[in-house]
Length: 56
Image (cartoon, rainbow, N blue to C red; front, side, top):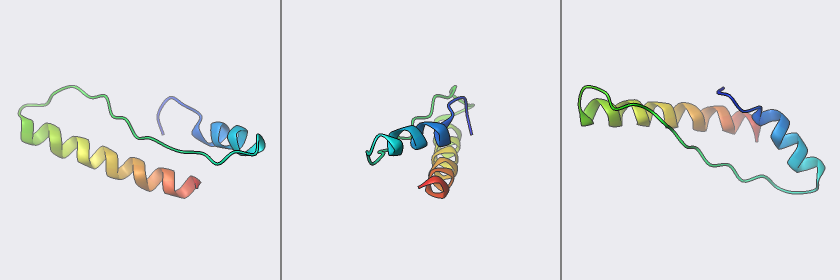
């Protein structure tokens, strides 16, 4: 998901004999209020974690 080919990057790191580390970073616009913004950010982070766990 997103713009980066994460499966390809993980394959390259593993092919080099390394163990990958992953970091989730969300860049989003502020929504109507802080509560909505934080709720959206949490949803995106949880979705990102679920996606990355499938790849590891």
